[in-house]
Length: 617
Image 1 (cartoon, helix red, strand yellow):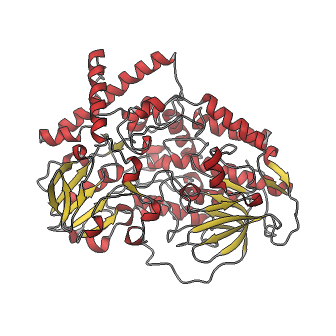
Image 2 (cartoon, helix red, strand yellow; image 1 turned 60 degrees about the horizontal axis):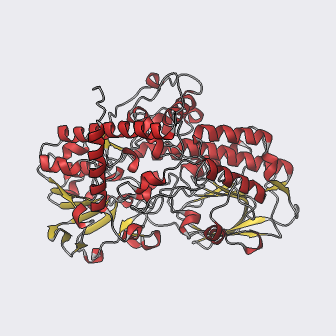
Image 3 (tube, helix red, strand yellow; image 1 turned 30 degrees about the horizontal axis):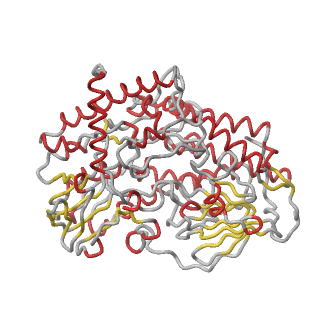
């Protein structure tokens, strides 16, 4: 490794000005509305290419103990942890054709996780599985999701190719009525929402896209019937074809090298280049990660969480570019262990940030032969302005004669789409196929998307209340007026680089709440005072990141350049501290959210007789 060269004050001043200029080149007045919303992503854009259409079935009208909305890792882990507490009738509902969530949909060529597989894949200790690669390919991740579901019997009650459309609290029976787009209206004593942060395909609202006569699809709905091949390549259907790729984030970085191998010519339409650091993927053996020890995976993922959260460790077990750059994640996460006064911290942070970005820009120069292309691929912004990406194949792909980078910064993106191609800067690029590697609408799913209506006590609409007064929860899980509703996700909860770890801790907490409510014959509902105290803590002790993101290049982190306001959105002391807070609260204060049932024997309310609650949290 080369010794880091810290930039001088003069260089820092030049960088600030360059970053400002590059940001201004990319700012658009339409902001986030430059993308089509989830509701607009219909037809072939959203159709399921993996399930072959939903299987015919009669609407469901029965009663279950717990309904879980979402079949990604959040929903799977909730189901597994509930089963571990003795809850039998757990029904998971998902619009995909099987378990996996994001990994069910994302099967594009080259898809991998950017977090080490031995910490990303949950329940490795419980399933006895050891990942084959340091960074797992998508299919290995999807199969592991199914493995967990099979281990805990979650397919038995599941409803796939089905979207929950409303949750309505029946005050007399004290149960939730769960309605879906398949005509279902079943009852559940408890509901857990685990709709994830990456579930709705995001598409740019390009003028004329509907007139394009070639083939189009989103990467989360990859059309192998057209391209041929599979996630490992071999796309013989693209031989001689001109393929355009829109999007150069994590998806584009992975898919472009694969397309370059098989397509006649690839045009990469780029507004803002990503930071692309070293990947270094390799096969791993059990002995490489200490998989012979009990609890090896839990130890490893806790170690990773501590490192990337700025907590001290004796040894960095993962030792990759995430952990080596951990000190720069302070602006990505809501919290980080800071040293000294703010002025000194920010000055040191900027120096480290500039050194890292200089390192990445130097990597571009070393990897890309054409100076003009290399200059366009250099990222000119602070490290935490965009989620980092990792690849050893992306930059070399631009040395191929059949790959052309089309920079769209000066035209604020693609100008329009015609019947035969894409227009940028007045020049038309003729295409046979247009691939949208534009990812998902981050954090806009389930309740927050407006597509899942939640009606609580007295007919109160959850999203309407939140729109008027802001989100109100206790620990991000429960809300007053919405009994037995448990929400998983990042809102007013903890955030972390490895989100599956965060989700597993949330699943343990949700299952513990259900077990406690059953043990006491109670409902789960926080008092308003508990919500007030939680919101006050989040607001008072949260970090000031608003100024940082307001100066960033536009992207989903800062609402396409409008900035990310400070507010009570996440726990301010990091995931490590939050998980400990939850453990203490379960031991000392869990009764705070339990209130007596008013109709404990009302029709439809009892859990199935087989429920065996175990206080194992």
